[in-house]
Length: 313
Ligand code: SF4
Ligand code: SF4
Image (tube, rainbow, N blue to C red; front, side, top):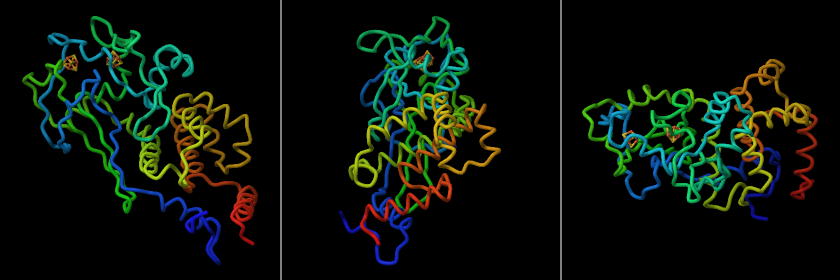
């Protein structure tokens, strides 16, 4: 066991756990959404865009490339995407995933995610929602489709608590929208695409992916790769809010964690609130962050177990 994992003389066990956690933190820059929808290599422009920067782009049904980008598209489904799309289609999340998604691995963090299924054995065919008139689920289309032709990078320095997001431009050969006579700021484009709700709901999910991407360079949380069970927990919270609700209400979850009564009432029906609880729970379990409070008696037992595990008196 390394010196970092030991409890120092007189040090509370909680502080040792926190120290073990923070020593593995690293500066990280993660491409959350690659911005390429047709999996073509190298079209990203390596320029960090500010909200006030100009974007020359317009997409409309009269354009010669109409729908070209909805074939073989690389669309990672965020938790908010899955909520919106399954609601719109009147499906349970598990049914939605079964019909319209494929399992994948988020490269930077090594965590399991779901991607939108594209037709064809090679996944280069059309998206299930592509119709001659355009996207059949346009009002609830995924965040990647909203950002296009922008990609998104999240950036966080080890010393800072704050994560910064920025966009970069992707110019794929098939996309003629870049030659249209319409100029707007990045901020206006984002507003027109309605990304704010998506980003607010997904924030905790991106935080977790960021931290895992940072820790991947040292082998994972506490120096170990996340376990299969941790990956399953992450996938359950990110993709299947119904299953996570059953997990909260039908296991000892509420006997272990001190969740306030009004929050318990809210998460019975509010999927967004339940997702936030899920992200807080994952941050607590994976990174020992104080995002959820364990009940006092459970905490006392956990500290005693930890002390005996590291050989403290
Ligand atoms: S969801 Fe809509 S916009 Fe996104 S790839 Fe499919 S058809 Fe295109
Ligand atoms: S302009 Fe670009 S985003 Fe619009 S349909 Fe053509 S390829 Fe797709």
